[in-house]
Length: 291
Image 1 (tube, rainbow, N blue to C red):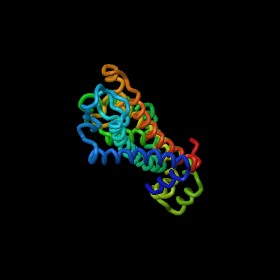
Image 2: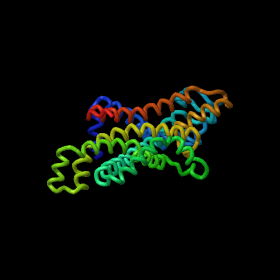
Image 3: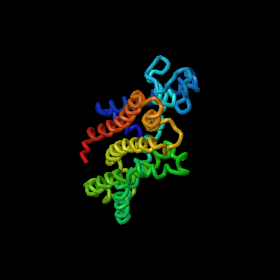
Image 4: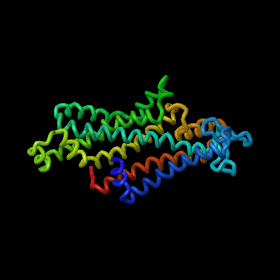
């Protein structure tokens, strides 16, 4: 399936743009790990506790020592920006693959085999669409849950919500339409089992629907994580939401807000969300998906 997803998302120029944006963020994160381990002193360039004693007052504008300046707490903005892509990439991977596994298996088998159960799942999915993921993350991020909301756990939560929500309904509608096609009726007449028909004949047809809409849903997961990280609900991990919050909150007390602190994380969120949006658009364009 992974090879199929890569091929189906890369063939259009939308997909190439999406992969280019995603590759930039991944390379930036790898470069950051190398710099921090070989060139940058951890006491100065650590994205969470780093502080440059040679520079005062903070925040500062770009310089040779700090190419994107420092934030109000004295941390290097470039280091924070490069490190911030890691949690979002991990979140996106978990969210996408969990969501697509749930929506493909349940969305294909339940409407085709268990029609009465499908009526229950339809109502559950409709209800999940009305639940705002940022609100759920903010609720879970209070109290003792704060330190346990890692990027991977947030990705799992969002993957389940998306897979059982809008993506399930999209796959379900496609399965119901395909179930009345002649090749499905022919398979039944030849003695094909329902599970075999659902997984071997119907599922390959609805894969583009699931891939397209889970890629689109992943962009919302990125935004939801941004809201949660802005309010400090995801523990002590490098993230762009924290950069924006610290720039605004501490900047008002420590020398004013430096726009160099706001531009990099804003650009990072834009690149990350846009990469999955363009990949989703690529699948829709290639397979003619209009819903």
